[in-house]
Amino acid sequence: MDDKMTTETDLMYQTMGISDAVLQFGKEIERKLKSRFDAIDQRAEYNQLKVLHAMQKNRVSENCFQYVSGYGYNDRGRDTLECVYADTFHTDAALVRPQITCGTHALALALSANLRPGDELLSPVGKPYDTLEEVIGIRPSKGSLAEYGIAYRQTELKENGYFDYPAIESALNERTRLVTIQRSKGYLTRPSYSVKEIGELISFIKARKPDVICMVDNCYGEFVETQEPSDVGADMIVGSLIKNPGGGLAPIGGYIAGRNDLIENCAYRLTSPGLGKEVGASLGVMQSFYQGFFLAPVVVSSALKGAIFAANIYEHLGYRVIPNGTETRHDIIQAVELGTPEGVIAFCKGIQAAAPVDSYVSPEPWAMPGYDSDVIMAAGAFVQGSSIELSADGPMKEPYAVYFQGGLTWPHAKLGILKSLQFMVDNKLVTI
Ligand SMILES: *Cc1c(COP(=O)(O)O)cnc(C)c1O
Image 1 (cartoon, helix red, strand yellow):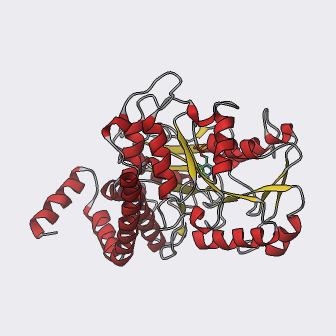
Image 2: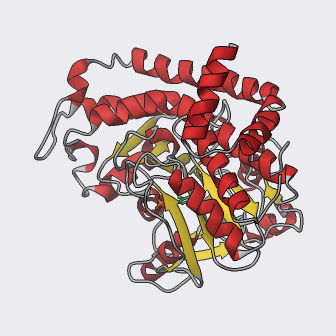
Image 3: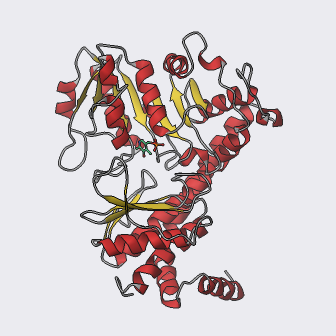
């Protein structure tokens, strides 16, 4: 930037409540990240071309955005979008629908559609995401897979967070029908896995049981790398449209992409036997689905820059950050162990204060269903609960960590992190 621009931008930061000390500290950190940011931009460039190529190949046109209601027979926008997803992820088929209400629903659908009574489900990566516990019936729940006679087994991860191959080998048996692999660590402390590592795990499993279905929970992972798990042997990948692939514009939805027969099963389960993919009107959301998917590679790159910037800022100040400041990224989540309740609260208040929506609201810790401690959440989002938008939350318990993710644009993610630091400084929780 030229000097005049720098001054104008600095003045805007001042107007937005960022002190010169915080701003200079941030600039110093950002300067050191240039080569990493360049690498992220290069991956975004590749992924942008991948999405565009799929859109052009499938002849996306204005009439794909038309409002379709009722049964939704011949909903060209919906059918074409599913081809765009399938081509982008290099799968036979995809199901991408507003009728899939969230990521948990998409995962529950993929599982219940492809498992039958007597089958066994295996998680070779330890405990799955919290909400999956009730889907599977690890915690007894109405309508769980367990109620339908589907068994579940998991193998624990090794001390270092990676796969225990001998344990996985002995867990596979004649009833094992489907293996579920979660790419992102979610809110656990284990590592998130690279596409390459997932590919190796799938190869190991398929070498021992070729007919087993390998499904990957791809939440928070889309477009972080240039390949997806479907490029390395996954039979199905599953995710939420209010995370990465919705690009911040999709107001609802989930996707499943994979092998033809498996996606067909999902469609018959989502709607009805006999109807499958043929029904399910897109109700006017198609333009946002297309446009969000088009933007997603660059939106994900903004979120990644934010995560790396936050990691380096807080690591420099002596906090433990997961992943650390230099590690390769496999998802968009950043954890920062602030160590005190005051730290978690100040961080989240800063993120909220930087938001485009509800910036004047001050988040407070609160009891939340499904959590065993109070939780504070910062989210000034256009779409309720959207976590591709800049958001943070922290359970009020040891080790007092905040989980931070999203950011539709890098400048917004940067402001959010500087604001969090400003709140920490103003509350005398940290000195810079
Ligand atoms: C978010 C998430 C889910 C569930 O998605 P929802 O849209 O919140 O239901 C499942 N698995 C992982 C790894 C996630 O990050």
